[in-house]
Length: 284
Image (cartoon, rainbow, N blue to C red; front, side):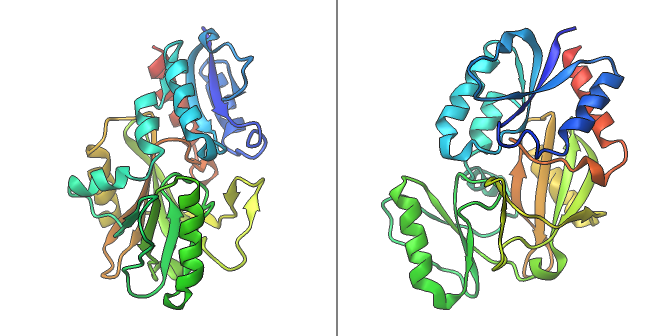
């Protein structure tokens, strides 16, 4: 049997806590697997029976290169999630499509590179680029912070990026967000992620903000929203649906993570084995 490539980034290889247990879980079902760096020019992708994108956390400054890489690899072997999924999901403007399909999403004001900066929401708000991961280039502002927020927008626009402005959901400070993990379209487990946008924000390896992660049992409304979101997109090997309570308490979609989400195996007994079995089905 050909090996499985678990695709990572050179800077993330030792930071992805999901990789070692997944390698072991795949070995337990007779599938050899190894971490492989996505932009390593020496890799022979055709030598793998399947390439599973896991922790390519450095792609955001090079999104076009990353998408081109995915399309090239998909011409040589099977890629999960697919190149088309990665192209769609690596630009958060996919949220506009989901709104059009009736999904309740955190309200978002979009600022194109040539547009003037506007902050149309009452209360605290968040500014971030449409292509981002790990809370990089993301900041929270108060209504009195119009000048630094405008400067933030202009810095992002200067690099040709589309900017998102969203109201800061006050309930995040106490409730945190809920991330629901689905493997091969089936619910696996959920996590609670504490509020990230604090004044003492720190980054791990320059890749992602430090996170407060724990186990969580999602509510029925959260599960219904996740199922509604996943019903609107093609089935994927893995998905994480991140939601948070809106002003009225009903959950709103923050992000649909189909590219390189942490799956937090440590928060659910057997989760790595569930993914290993799903990978085995793909190989069959």
